[in-house]
Image (cartoon, rainbow, N blue to C red; front, top):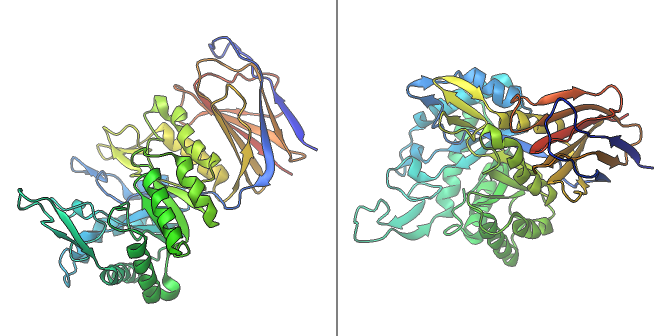
Length: 435
């Protein structure tokens, strides 16, 4: 029998709220999702580790990224700058990245790493948006040296790509690092379609054997392109080639459900492994979580941001380098709470009552968390959470509005409260202890 938890959320002297609306009811399904929730952070590009000659403390960065937040993995680069010319290798391009990886390992010896082939234009001025050096991705007029001719793609070499990736993994193993996940390509759907990508995966597997990381693919630029790529791989009969299906939302083309509709047919997890537009300055952070929660409700179970560390201008990043000091933003604290209460657990479908922006629920062991976002200008008069877990006890309500502490305000619940206002433009997490 469902246990009914009634939380009367009434206006009180602590909060100035508009006229309240009627009661909200959130119903939590007893059935868990098929795959566990997985979260990560990203240092694939090291643009802001040093700002104006001021480097952040790498151990402090590591503590914030993987000590305070129990993320599953951190994304790091496969840097084409190490092999700009075929046959010549300069491993020194990884010096700073290795320093950061060692700091992450000190903070969390069990942290996993996710390898990302970084677009070559980051290391070759004027180069194309290609995830491999130009002797693997061949172009005519690749650096636009002849302004009267466009750059034109010629060919891709799967055999050379597999050998290049293997060298990276072998080098990193010599430095003491193994990888749990890898992309074969980063976005780049236009020229690395399923035949080229699958061929590279097959060749890399044959080279790596048991050391092969799980492949995350296609890591498309947007939902629409990703869905088209998946349909082509299915038609080819090779949707078995990768382990985890993923897309980015670098630009919002198509819909997240459009990608999910194809991905869920493959009986494997699907992630947004480069989630954009979900953070935002402090005043927007709670509202912008709606995008992540929309993904969860569509069945996505994995999330990694893009470039966790920003600079002073990038208020939307979780962490910022301000003159060598790391500033911790509100979105960091929201994400930290989400990760630390649901990472490794399972999503449970919920209803979203009319008038409430969204709701999601997660169960991990004996912990149930129910998130509710009221991204409207009106407060709710009451909320009721119906769930199937007998003996559950509400222990904490944490919430973030457009103002207030970045860490969130916390109400410790020792008995079912008589009143607690569901404020406008505010995100709530209701935490229950299960027997």
